[in-house]
Amino acid sequence: MICVWDTSSMKVLAKLKGRLSMGVKNLCFSNYGDLLAASGMDTYHNIVIYNWRTGDVHASCSSGKADIWSLSFTSDDESLVATCTKSVKFYTHDKSGTLKPTDVTGWNH
Image 1 (cartoon, rainbow, N blue to C red):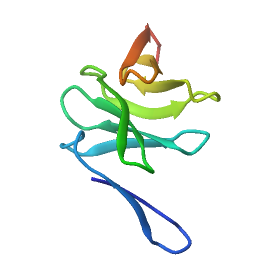
Image 2 (cartoon, rainbow, N blue to C red):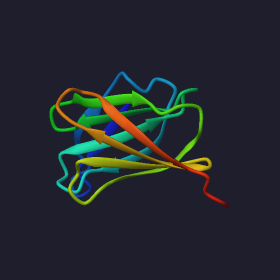
Image 3 (cartoon, rainbow, N blue to C red):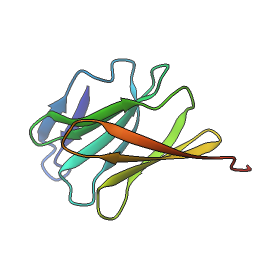
């Protein structure tokens, strides 16, 4: 479960349940603050974008077997960037509920 709370009052504002049952590794709020992206610790490192105010799932997908190290929305909130082991993945999302990935691989460490 993911809990969102007000840091001033410590009041829980939302409890997001379901999709990421093996644990949550990364969280990232959108720039406008209405969406919350999360990546899971399951085998296929699922990514879920929630509308955290309503609890609805905005979009989701499996990212593959590479560990996700961080998530970030682009400045217009239309894409999500995931840094992974040996790759950077870019995802677009829309109202259909699907994240569509494009890989950029071959990064040297």
